[in-house]
Length: 146
Image 1 (cartoon, rainbow, N blue to C red):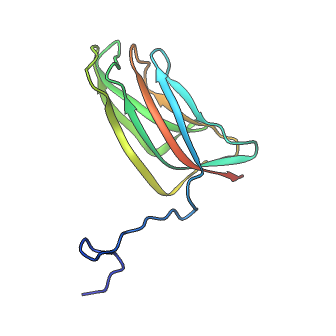
Image 2 (cartoon, one colour):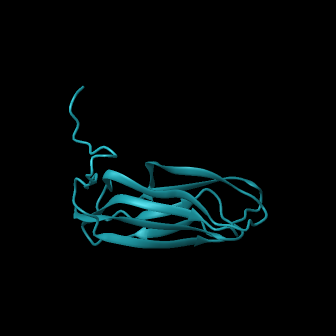
């Protein structure tokens, strides 16, 4: 059997996760997309910089409703392009439910997602506007010189 550097459950050691680009320096509560809106700018990097998205968490309020019940697309954009792997569908009805739902628990993007161009804005987007409730997001990462 090959030796492993992974500390097993009974080794008495702790597994340590490190980010290849350093620890996230920016933790941004992006706020929420309220009813009637389909887009929310989350992170506007400084002039000449790019954002490196290293993780996020996403939730939808129990009061979220749509005019027509069905799947609601929720996605992140880098400027005008959808970020690969950052698009989800969830069912939202015409009546509110009594609990909030965490759609995406904290996701860690090991190397992070580096924005495709300087000055691009990271945004949260919906496929259609809610008639009630909201979608929340918190992101973390780094800003890098473009």
